[in-house]
Image (cartoon, rainbow, N blue to C red; front, side, top):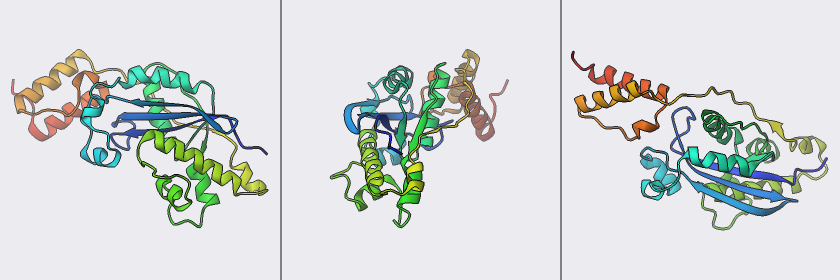
Length: 242
């Protein structure tokens, strides 16, 4: 059984861990052909919301860095075109995939992929190591010099190094080799519609009445997001008197 040598390694950075409520701020994608890196693409993305301070500290990506960047609606078609029909590889790939697929679906686009998850491989092949996060593994195994953890492109390149290392160190173990077969990713998501004009008006009225502000562009909200903000304000501050 041979390893996959043509693929796209991906990584994303986000405002949080929940695809339904958090937003992508960076995508890194690396094309590999015959086991060699042949092309890199990196997109900084304006999430249309304030980036939480802990994310700024973790990634180094600030509001100022993304304020002039394209939105995810502009980037997704380019990213999907870059990936084409390729297998994708990532560390805990289902997390990246869930964010990416949700945004693709909201744009009416298809993003279905077979993938190899280096975290899944590491939990079995490198079971003796204390931790399995990407930065720790690459440092412990001396795979990457001066790795900048939590930046999408660096993490995508690190994933390739880890993938190669694990394949090269399993020898003729057929059970381990079977783990390198790409599997379809499963994440079910329904398309979310943009917030209606009435929702946006009601939300703005509530914010003005209670003297509040949101760290997010109201025009970028979906119906569900707008409803959630409206409900939270009414619950905490009350309705506008008639």
